Length: 283
Image (cartoon, rainbow, N blue to C red; front, side, top):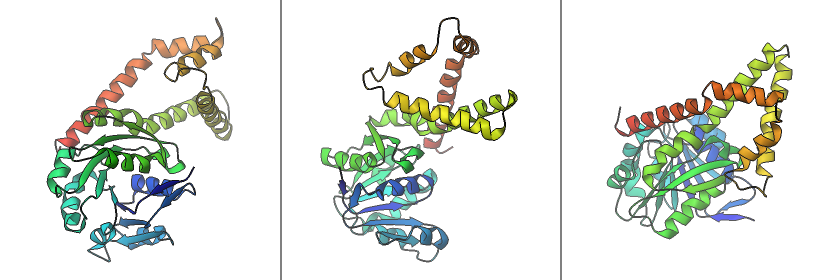
């Protein structure tokens, strides 16, 4: 099924903005009116310039951001959190009434963004994660006080083009960021540690990488294919099926439980949430 989107601008096509751009360039997505992106340097801008992507650099064109949003129905803000409000004020005069502005920056509230923009502009907050680059992202999306159902649907369609979307109230966005936003880093960290464990058992690093990364990918695919199991219970049931009574897996899982792994994840999520709140407070 092909997704059709209106003209879209991405201001700050760095890591996250670039991931979303990659998703929007999928053959299954059509952006009527094209995609416009901005970066600071011409080197980065030129690398993204294609027949269906207009790419601007602020170092060569001070009005690049304003030029990119002209005629855009959806504007994604992908710059660093401390730059968001100034950028919104910069492009505000160039935004047409009815434009939908979506920030993917952590910690910047809808209230702060709405204050920087005209009342005729809709504001939403999103928290996508980097697997969006391969169409397997998870995005948390929260509507602002001026956002209609149609605005929310349009923003949702953008992120649905790069994965799953979870619509939540704004007060849940920062908490969501600690799970799906930061989550890929947690998974990569687990993979690192399992590879080191394999090396310690005498395998080469190449063998360890094949074993561990193949196991993670296979387990994820198996989980995704388990349609007959309730989604929230599927991981527990699949783990149970692998864990034979009195077997090796049971012994290993017991060690993980004894180490308080669930508590470690609770503390990690709490630390990430605390930092998100610090960013929102400007510290």
